[in-house]
Length: 269
Image 1: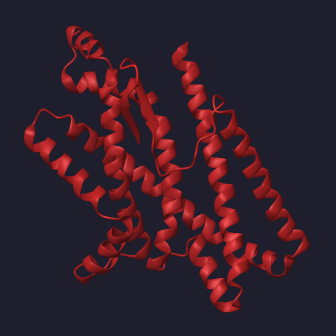
Image 2: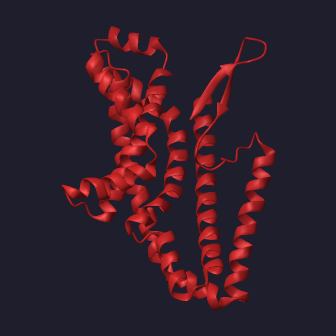
Image 3: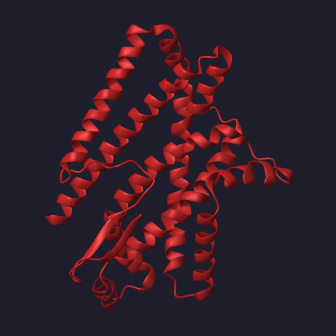
């Protein structure tokens, strides 16, 4: 999420990046790039040291959790895909001239963003389970999708609003109706603005998937908890889980950084 504020001189707005995702290393921020390198190399070195020098129990833990990593990515990918669809519909609703559509979309955003994700997970799985029994994995995906769909809706709304009005007017002068203008002119351009924050939300969502373990979903954290409960090696288990999460997050943050730089160069051209 980005927040705009007035600059001290009153001219250019100051853009403040605020988000739940990882810190994205950018070439313009040398300190953050160096910190990313140190963190990534350090995490890989620690993982290698633990696996080679102390295979018992770290190698056993490492062999125990791969299926949990796969489930973590499954929840993340399915949730982000659904959240993008929900976010697009919500974003269009937020800018709709129809007051009822706008009201429904705005109310959805306010309610969902005002309720913690953990509460939404409990509500869908346990509270609604009183009427309709939802499988744990499906409940996790639904809760994550609806939660992040609200945030994606604001991303889409901001991305669409960033396109100059002249683009819309030019399309309408060529005979495009509102739907055609949005589909062929506005959204393709807005996507360049939307893509980087979507990447950041992807990382944030991946980290938040650790919450789905409370529903019994066999994600990375859940598998770690199972190993720890059987072996009572809690320190070693959660050290390994933390290092794996860190490496995955750092890799994804670097990929988002590369994507942002390529989009920036493409726009400048």
